[in-house]
Amino acid sequence: MASPVSNGPGFFGIVFGAMFSVALGAVLAAVYLVAQPAEVVTAAVKEPEEGKVYFIQGAAGGGRFRLPKGI
Image (tube, rainbow, N blue to C red; front, top):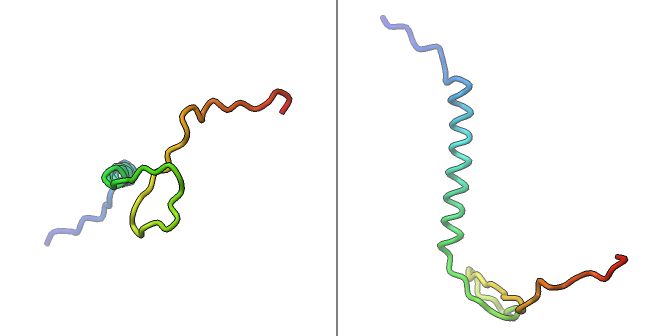
């Protein structure tokens, strides 16, 4: 009669499996978010449709804001 295997997965196998599952989840989440269509709007929508993604586009040059000196 053959004896049952008493050794489980090693430390390397457990760490590799955990890192692989996290990486695979991140890739699948990124693909899911990229695949969703987004409607570009210039102002907030009064009554958004359920399940629709909106991108509120900012003003041109909006990143040029500077804080006054001394703050």
